[in-house]
Length: 219
Image 1: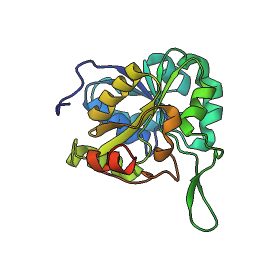
Image 2 (image 1 turned 120 degrees about the vertical axis):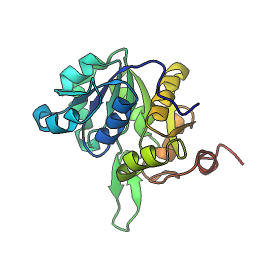
Image 3 (image 1 turned 180 degrees about the vertical axis):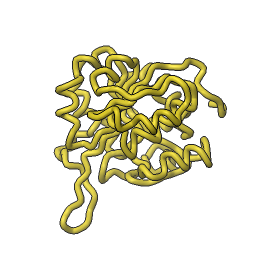
Image 4 (image 1 turned 60 degrees about the vertical axis):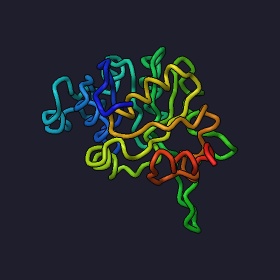
């Protein structure tokens, strides 16, 4: 991919405009997409969206989900199921990018997934949203680096993604590129444990080549 903005501006929603959603949505607005930031209290985002490129606005979760073709889930994982109970029907037929992390720090200091049983977060969300197409992305890079590395070192660092449908992954790969990173496809949702908490690429940054090696995609 070239270092350019998207050739097809999209209507995007960011549900959860915090430390993950704000920098990603900011990148997308700068790339020319129409971005609606969904929040429990959209009025609190007025100063933030006023600084962004045209088309960015704040709205309720439901309104943001309704307005978009591609939706980013970036609320804390503990709030995810409640959010999906509210907006799940509005996500039918849409691409849903799951950037939430079921993270737990054990008593002995290990980072693990709360899901257990070999269930990946992407598959978990896909079960909750059977009428949407779920793709995992923006999960393994520390949130404080999402803006700086995607701006100052554009298209130097890799960003893993995973999903079951090729066309949806193509869309998300372009959005990863528009956010300043190089997309690296890890395969399907059942193959995405590497980018979940406790996985081999979590929570780290890699060049695309090193990311492929770390995820076992290259020798």
